[in-house]
Amino acid sequence: MAEITLRGLAHSYSKTPTASDEYAIRQLDHVWHQGGAYALLGPSGCGKSTLLNIISGLLEPSEGDVLFDGQRVNELPPEERNIAQVFQFPVIYDTMTVYDNLAFPLRNMNIPEYRLDPKVREVADILDLTPLLKRKAKNLTADEKQKVSMGRGLVRDDVSAILFDEPLTVIDPQLKWKLRRKLKEIHERFNITMIYVTHDQLEASTFADKIAVMYDGQVVQFGTPRELFEKPAHTFVGYFIGSPGMNFMEVSHHAGSVMFGDQPVPVASAINQRVAAASSSNIKLGIRPEFIVVSSTPSANALPIQVVALQDLGTYSLLSFTLAGQLFKARLPEGHASMGDSAFAEFPLQHMALYIDEYLVEVGHE
Image 1 (cartoon, rainbow, N blue to C red):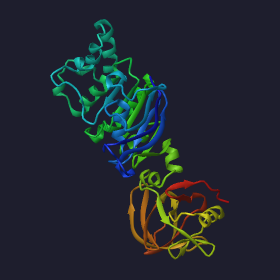
Image 2 (image 1 turned 90 degrees about the vertical axis):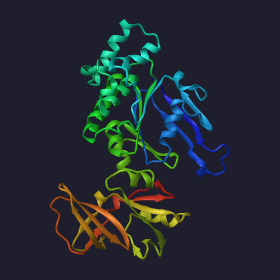
Image 3 (image 1 turned 135 degrees about the vertical axis):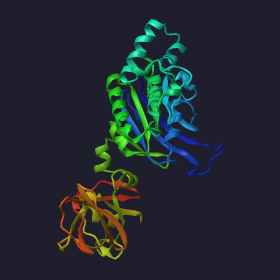
């Protein structure tokens, strides 16, 4: 088992980088505590796989240090880091049986057969592979092959951590949920540090206790799925987490009011003060679609909106509307009142979040 620390980490695929946009990883400090179940979540190209390959030793970082239990391992090759890595496409030997595939890492370590056999059978049982032990790997389905690939990492007692790089991409959608639950069970049983890379927020929240959200080569927030939803620390987290993501409006301050274009927006006094005092012009207000209150009749803090579309999704409806020419989304509860082309939207003050230069600003809502 290992605590993995990333200290001042940066990586560029250019030999002589001269600008920040030439870095795949930009000045990152982070700790993966021993025994945790973590997800590394972000869109394609944000640096997730690069970071995973640096941790495993497939890449040496351009700058900074990787530490396992406080020991610097930058120059150590993968085989000396005791890391198991499960890739997007299964890495197994098609001509071997499932049993021999699972046994292969242990035989490489010269583990005697009498110790090897019970471990192979234990892992096969956990992964529901026992009926397949005598079958050649080439005859397996894609999800069975991926389970064998996972098992090759789990069978070793000396593994410090298991890294999963988009492991369910090739798996049938109907089996993905089952495999995610299986991984969760494995983690609870073995207490191994696990880092799961994905672009899918559902996969991340199903598997992980804590999620590191990556954007543009940096971890912009690290927290539980609930923390990421309720209190996004960066506008990207607000946009990326949730279905649909958070609504944002670029605002300014004029004549004592927070303005969205020419539209004054009711906000808590603390937000008004911070917007007025801000030195940056990159100021945004954010609110989740779940918190917007829509009505066909006006009220004190409601703003006039134009209805674009209303989708009935069963347990709720998704309303698309425009305010001051910008498109917004609101989730309406089942059984909501009907509305015409025009309506009114209220943005409850306690649910409005302030972002300056894309990062959350902590304010009260008195």
